[in-house]
Image (cartoon, rainbow, N blue to C red):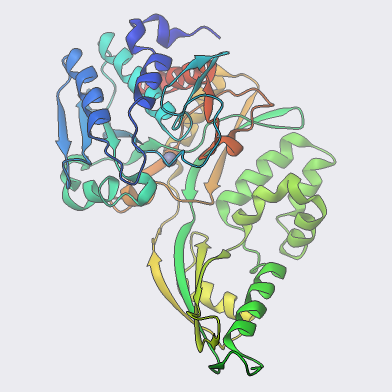
Amino acid sequence: MPDQTGKQLPTDMQPAELLQNLIRFDTTNPPGNEGECIKYIEKIFSGIGLQTKIFAKDMNRPNLVTRLRGRGDKPPLLIYGHVDVVTASGQEWRYPPFEGRRIDGFVWGRGALDMKGGVAMMLAAILRVCVQNIKPAGDIIFAALSDEEAGGDLGAGYLVEDHADYFSGTKYAIGEFGGFSMHVGNKCFYPIMVAEKQACWIKGLIKGPAGHGAIPVRGGAMASLGRMLGLLDRHRLPVHITPVTRQMIETMALHLGFPSGLFLRGLLQPGLTDLILKLLGGNVSHFDPLLHNTVNATIVNGGKKVNVIPSEIEVHLDGRILPGFEPDDFFNELKTIVGNDIDFEIEHYDAFHGKPDMGLFDTLASVLKELDQDGISLPMMLPGVTDGRHFAKLGIQTYGFLPMRLPPEFNFSKLIHAADERIPEDALNFGADAIYRLIERY
Ligand SMILES: [Zn+2]
């Protein structure tokens, strides 16, 4: 496929060059320090005469917004990405994580996939639209955000709280994650994220008799903790088929045919779901969180001295709730597994309500079809969270749409937040071209 975006732009505005430069700012969050990286983006836009605004709750953690005027026939379309990254420390990298090296057709470095690569695609697409003087149907709002990796309180969360006006009238947005190729059998699917699960972090208090470490205690808090962890390890919460996951699985099943399609369709029969997950193991494990509310114990605090039996143990659990469910539903499910003896309370809950508005889906799918005739787009729910949940409070539907055509052997999910994060240059050009086409036809 010709790299049309690249050909229209000077080299320093091509996706790979932009990404190299973005990676070279160490925006590891915490502490983030996104300021210099945001200034770099500001400079690129001012270079082509595009005005920008900085919205910052903390001047070291700024967010940049800009607006391309459209013809006013449609509401604004928001295109956003975060420039902070997770740490690379403690990982063994083949090349240094903040040098943005281009080797063997890849750009290497922290953030190449999550999500400076996406920001580079967006920038390249917007620059091309500006250089060509294209006026889309509606305004295009671009936002480069800080702080996504630590919850977005200084980034998307802050913009939604304090600068909602800037986004007024916006219905649709594109952001992370989705639009990348996923090879199953001999088919190539492009899942586009249209929904995400809700994070519900909870704390459980486990009580039991205290005592001297020299005297045996039965039924203590430690034993209850062990029992609870064992139960959570052995059992799943009940199966729920949400509309997005149904559509995703049905589309895949239709194209895969017999026998894979039959197994996949079986996942949609609640009586068979867990059995199929067990039988097919690793092959379908990524469907597990899309079909259940889930919980993982992640932190345990209990006991201060080796010779004192603690009367209380605190356990923190990372709960993830499907759209359409509430924390109370989740607690009830949890108690059917671990019993009623443990008191749970919510520490943090990101409510994410409402059904996905699929109004932009067909446009996105048609862009992908143009770039890859054999590709099959389908809607997807993300088991994690993105800044999309903040913008959802303004009634904005985010689509995870950072298109990448990846080689089948490229293990995308294993490289995110991990060592040797990298992105094929072809995939970057593919994404920039797709976003350009989206703006052009919006
Ligand atoms: Zn991200």
